[in-house]
Image (cartoon, rainbow, N blue to C red; front, side, top):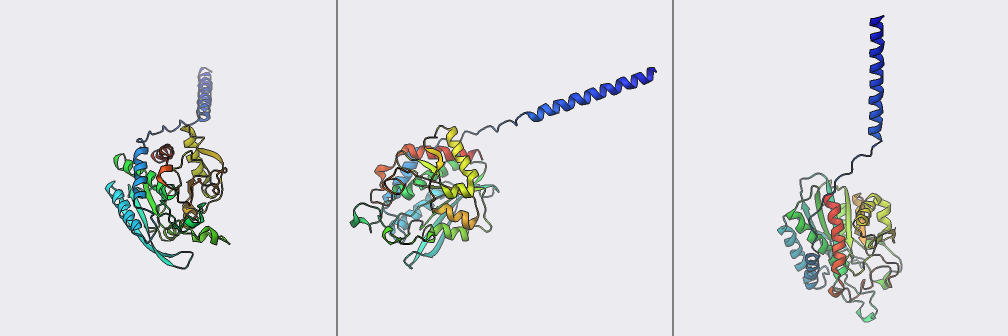
Length: 333
């Protein structure tokens, strides 16, 4: 009996011990996993980004086929090369709305080019050949400076490229400056809207990427990010095709105290370069673009497609906010 009692006692002890372990395991499983520690990225320099915008504008309107366009292309490729990027200049031909065949250049810079996981950052670098929304009808055939519409997004990404050289992120990053984004038909001609008349450089790249079978975890396009009191809303195609990226960017902005700039409400549907990257390259991509329902100019910033899209209306604070948010997204990916 002593032996039997000992066996029973031992069995009870084992049973109690197992129950305690299981309860401990259950308690452990109820705990939330520890949050990933956020990385503080290198500081984004708005003065530097502003200077990059200014240097583009100093070439004059970057209309494809012009000398200013050629000079700016060389300058952009040289800048990116100086920051240690692997550069690809993708020359292409395409037809604009008027049936004319035009030459374009997509400028691509790859950082950490051997890293498998990649993020795609984009902006267009050409400027509009028509000031077709200017109040002065006589100016409608005048090319614009495109300080905000084009140059601001490029300026932010050039400053990020400068930082990538000094402090490389863990992921691979590809920056693409698309050409011929803004050579759609003048406003007076748009009796019927054809989305294929816009974003010609991104259409070409999305069907003919610079690297065979190129892919990225996601893409972020910057367009018109330099106006004073800029407001960025959740663009429709971005939300539909890449909501997780919109959530990532807008939540990052909110955590940084920028809810009043990255406004968490629906914006309009914009046929921009990200639209074609989603459609043809199948890379989930979003558009960070100025959308203000109170604007007098089709929900864009007031000087959109006018001769007043000039440096004097570029705001360093807006550049700083966009740069801060994107740096935090990239370095914490």
